[in-house]
Image (cartoon, rainbow, N blue to C red; front, side):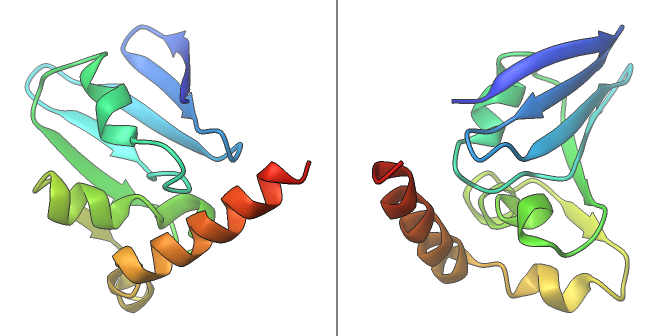
Length: 113
């Protein structure tokens, strides 16, 4: 479950159950999601509860807690995802198989807490 905190007018912090954050900035014509979180929850679903504007995603860097939902954005929801060219290879490797393995490991660990 994603928790949403409104920090400014049209600026939100979305935190997934793995405690990973993404930031949503809503403009006049588009919305920007800065990072996508761990993939533990459906970030797009949470964003769509806030805005129905066209969405674009920018990943700040390639750590898993910032990019794991990028594959969902790109493939499942057809949302453009951008990153610095030096991070692009890492971003492209964060497809469903890697995301699924991480989520399975996270779920097994969470069950034992």
